Length: 246
Ligand code: NAD
Ligand code: ZN
Image (cartoon, rainbow, N blue to C red; front, side):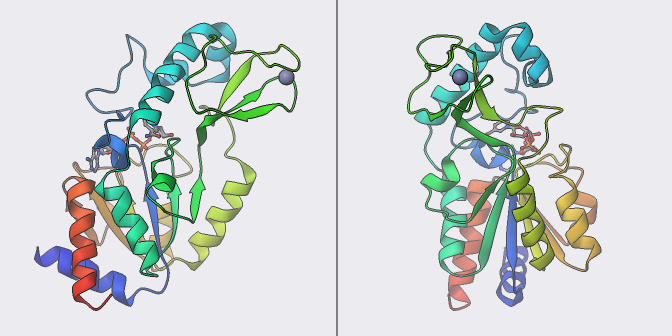
């Protein structure tokens, strides 16, 4: 409790707070993380499915996995952690969320300034032409094909070995340069370049706050490491900020 209060005070005096979120923030909405105990789909590991090579080798298998994940995202609801971040943005404290998540729970919680490093699972695009489309239900035909050219449609996510969308990278750079405090939530800190962000901020003299149910690769460089569920800790921080006069 004492620590929550100290974190709230730090946020209060910071000039530019950003958040870096990972799969853990959506776990309490029922969306499994990649590296937790429920992280396996059938017998496959995400690293074996989330590549362009895997997709070309077996589009049906990869699309079955994405159709399962898409229906999970569409059925999920933002949890108190997503809502607390949205509230912190409304308070004027949080300036941006940089997320590795491909779900839409931050926007559905009302957050406005979101940088999606790894794309959006609901946006599909053709691998043969410029056709793209936003899904509001899982594709019925698997694998789905482009209505304009007949090529395969692919999920609008960044696969292992693929570059981060340049616009997202530019926006991240801008926020990173301004940030004096970062809150790192529900990420294992092993997927780059996202994992480098807290290190860079730390190196520039910024503060690092972590919220996670376990220790991570980021924990050693944190100023505050709050161990627990994001959906429990973030609302407590919002309450503490309200007491400080927000
Ligand atoms: P990860 O699966 O590697 O790590 C999840 C982290 O969340 C772990 O450190 C775990 O301890 C923590 N965690 C679990 N439940 C938590 C909770 N209730 N509160 C706080 N922390 C909790 O996830 P990652 O670091 O985001 O990297 C994996 C990649 O997986 C990303 O590229 C992302 O695109 C993708 N992914 C996205 C989603 C999604 O969009 N919801 C889901 C799974 C994977
Ligand atoms: Zn096409």
